[in-house]
Length: 208
Length: 300
Image 1 (cartoon, chains in turn yellow, brown):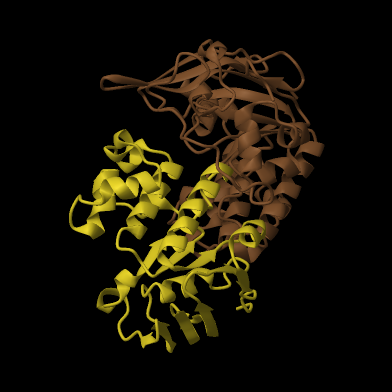
Image 2 (cartoon, chains in turn orange, cyan; image 1 turned 30 degrees about the vertical axis):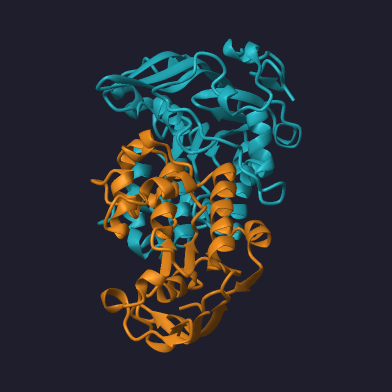
């Protein structure tokens, strides 16, 4: 179970105040809400990338004590972002990007097959592939360490309908095999209705 | 008001040891008072076509065919001609991710007033039409939310009152309310007699605002016709697969992956992924000449 309890977080001022959310293993929770409502902030807290001002995060009943570079449980959580181009080192080939968390090449081909990347594409650098192909590589990289939870922050925004359906299909089959829980953030309510078991809605930000 | 007549346009990029065939033999006409959506997956050549129309291609690109806007061939025009008579004046561009296209060290107002001065428009009026309040204009790009940056980009594209607007993935990253507001704005422009070319992978947005939809696959237009017919009664197996992949429909991907633009099949580029393909698909299909046109030997 991945849980946020009474989380208040933000940058200089809080963006979210007293938010609680639970992702059960094997389940998909959708997270919706207008621009600026704090969806990405909550995602970053749950991915242990951002330290909240108050509140706790628990992973499988273990309370998280360190965030960002101090997060010892980071590898239990995989993350996908909206813009794959900002998420991959431009000097890496796709093969190197997928291999990076593995510390070796062993499972790259298996992961690449999962997301349907050909050998030729694996040898290319980010500027030589489309957004859809790059997001496939990011998904392979996110699954490399068999995360218990996967956080998808607007993962499909840059993708066409067919690539969206393909990647959601890959995530669902990973969930069936591993029992992983998924937090799917999107402003596309039609997508969340189809993808998530339940959807949580964050309300609009208070005017400042 | 004039038509945009894109006639047999191809764009190739010369790389070391390979040629990327990014746009292949594309013909399309956009009339005043019409919105045409160009849809297809990322990497299929949509943005390259838009860049070609505005003279924004890199140095290793070779183009053929013509794209006439009135009596100007956009592909043959010099950069000086494009800069002084076309960009902003006859064609407005709403770029992908507008926040990153604004100059980060200047306020929205200073950028909009400069554009208005150069193009002979009215900054205040353009801002008001785009739904911007005076206090928004005094912000720097990093202080603008996605929706506000989008409105600044709209104001910049429209301040010179160009008859043709090209919008490249304008809905990406906006939430549904902002998308609906933006599409309403496009519809108003079209009803005012503007022509809009909407480049998008968002089929729902295309369905909502476009009069016609052109589906692009591996650099070619494979189907073009009235918006509802293309989405609800597609003739090309790829267009049908793309429409059916929507979450409110089958939510299943088109099997396989698009071909590499450096190694396009000689015949139909979709044949390797197509369940209906037969020997006849080794010949390249030609786009028919109907109001609902398709380039397929065995249309659905």
